[in-house]
Length: 409
Image 1 (tube, rainbow, N blue to C red):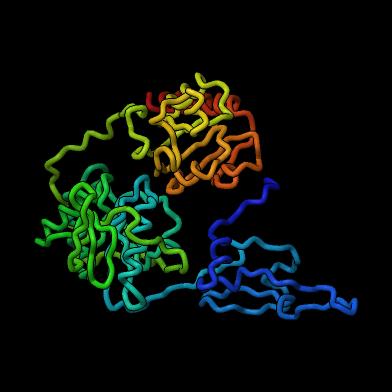
Image 2: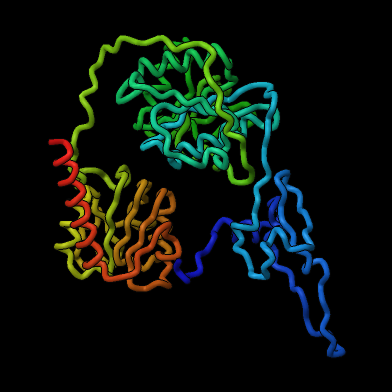
């Protein structure tokens, strides 16, 4: 294990926010100090080890069992136990159909679940309907109370008509108060409009806010807003609400009582079409390989991007030095990106750059400086020479592809 101290931005934010329900649990208390008469004074409240129970209440453990019999300081993330939100008999259901690109919740999906949690309140339950393979393991902390998983060959690939039939079965069994789908290019926008046509209802599209029974959506190429009474079917834009962060949920699996009818597809799915990553706009790219001042061999960097199938990006310093065009600059002064994987090579992590990658799901940093801000921000960090690491990564990728070709033959 690395000896580097990893920051927990969320725990730090809770420690600063006095109104947060977990604020008190993250406050460090002085256990002893030297009094004015030279006597050592002790704080008996701080000496007792405390922890947050499953109901969100603080418990005192004077035996030290919860601390493993050790006096070592635990990380803030280990001390925080989010309160469990349980809805045994929901008065109504808010149905959410996330995109689940790659089998995982995207940032757009988590915003949508945050909106569903607001609409459900304490009496309702958030029901997530997921198609295909699941690789996500954080449904509990994303705000999912009930989970319907529909997997099978009929849902593989492009199958909107079959999915609409499944959503009609969900409609018949649960009668959701609201349907929420992401208004995205990953399938949610089309599926939501098909569902609206099937139900005979008119949806609200590009919704960025739902409050007091009113929904507000973008119109006129983003120059105007349309406010209306929130309909039952809402196609929400990204950042429509804050993701759930203050509670855990059951994510209880439920099954459909009736079997979904099989649809005879009128469209044949021929699979994905290969696209040149260089032609993908950075704002829409799923995998970005970004270079900074620490990259010395730019020819190797370009070969690595081609081998990995990544879209190229760069820091402001690399662009100013002429290594990359201005249109490839990532950051608050360049392009804000939302990639699922962002690999930063030789980038120290200026504040403007970190702002531009704030919505990326996974950040991988390759750098020689273990104390730079990009290493602190990264989900995974590799300390070493970028040229050697990229070369080794290319070799592993080529070996993997050759093995796949032999297996296919």
